[in-house]
Image (cartoon, rainbow, N blue to C red; front, top):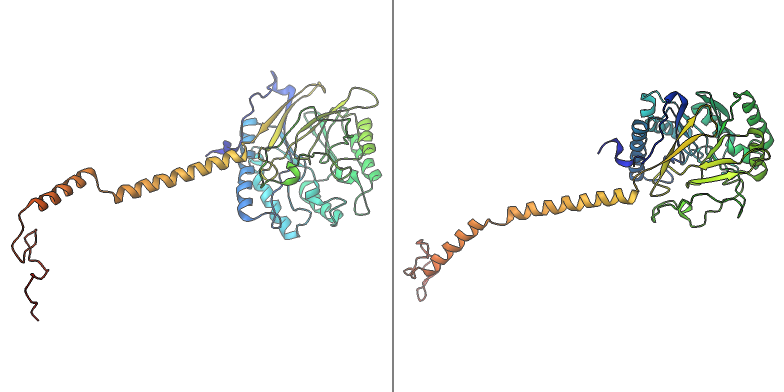
Length: 383
């Protein structure tokens, strides 16, 4: 099968009349490349092949001008030793090689599985330094066609203990990056979503994951509530970011489910947030990514296309069907070799019938005219 074997092409993708007026950006999240602790070699081989094949197909078909991975590129980055981290870097390079070959930049945010968080019990600062050495600062501005994309370290913004950067320092860092950005309203990129007050802010579109017993239980739980600071930013941090930055759009990840929501601000219209679903078959059976076409000169104009991968159960069913069909064809071939043809069977039957109809042979002779080896009744066997 070709590059597109694991990708369903979107039914409708926005194409501007003038390509110079738009910016096409592909967003994916929570790839979770497996490590040695939570995955075995076959699981890793199968699911990484899926991720790489789907990524290549997205680059070929969707033709993005830039790609952002919104955290959790790795599943065990926070536990990985330095030698394991180097292996992770190589596998990530293979995953994104098709983008590099087309000259498409790939920007990667840090997630809690990449560097840890205040609950991980690891050296968060050392993990963050290692991540930044490979993929750039965790707080930075990337400007594409005049549109600023503000990448913020939401794990530091969540704060929590001495291992993490304080909230105030992280927020000051964010403000400094915004001050250095162009005048256009930024697109805010986070790993952890903004705060969602219970009962007050719901997803505008329900995203029920396709799950089987082997998928990640936390991703498939019917209870989708989020825990403050672990799964989303605190309320005061979220509101401060919205009021200070006035972003044109917020994109986040972490929950493994897509969620479109609106956040009120002190002045102006509510800000839209899109939480991107996972890109890994490990977390759910129907992972996806999102292509967004931004209008360069109109901050309120953009087109979103959710690109869903082929459901994993469908692929498994196809493989099982091919396996059983191949086995059945093999059995038919073996049976054909062991079973005589109809002509051979008919001739053998005629020969047998002719032998049965022939007169009895003389004593000591068989029906085929050869001397019989059976003793003649009444005659003693000579020594």
